[in-house]
Length: 311
Image 1 (cartoon, one colour):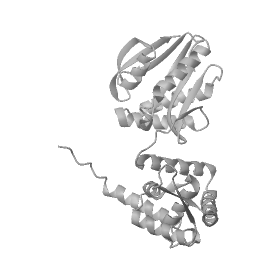
Image 2 (tube, rainbow, N blue to C red):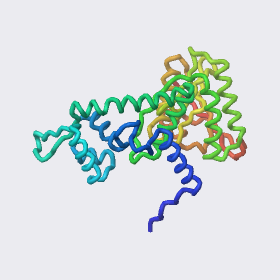
Image 3 (cartoon, helix red, strand yellow):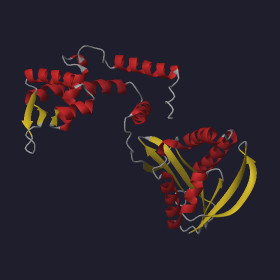
Image 4 (spheres, rainbow, N blue to C red):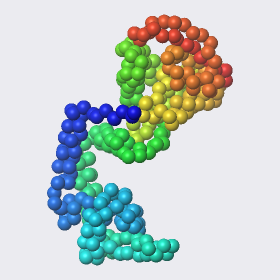
């Protein structure tokens, strides 16, 4: 017998409702006419879809916006009365009627579209560039988490920049505490490794790859010079939200390709046996286990492992 999904805590429900009340008030969705116009939010959204997506059937329009057919029909009838719509039959199926905007419809929509852009622009102008980026990233997270069919947004890889080193130490400290129960000594180790990399960075022989999706860091890895012939792969991690995309393998492949291009003979790494997913990537890319040692690190009894790859 299947179990019913666990309902969220009342305080989280109330926080979401509070945000909804704040945002609808903040951008004027409660006003009778959106953006001081004679059109409601729903009516403006219909004009937007017809303006930006070209001819659509009423059925397609209703499905896209999740509107009741009767409610949509009344709005379209109102638009017909104002000469905002034109209808054309499909050449392939004469039963299908496509809707699009007339010149009057486009003329009615354009000032609404501009007013909306101006309203958002004014809101963003009160924020610093960093705050604007944080806001946009937060909105992308909301859309991805509660969307009906969250798209697999492609990630990008970039080199490290100011702010990344502190973030990686912070995020890995939290993530490994949540998933493996490791204590703050692991965060301290990550901070030491990352800080040493930033302090002594040799761009000719070393590299850090940062993976981003929707402007949010979702993974990273470092390649650090050990000797002229040996490089170290360090601090590989992938956010839970980005797992299953092949990102971990991609980051390791980037390290291997870079190490070969720079003339290293061996790529080495140290990990712990409980990191099963990472170990699978190392095995799949040709690393071999050369040393194991039991130890008590990060508040846990672990087995440390050294893996090498001959290049």
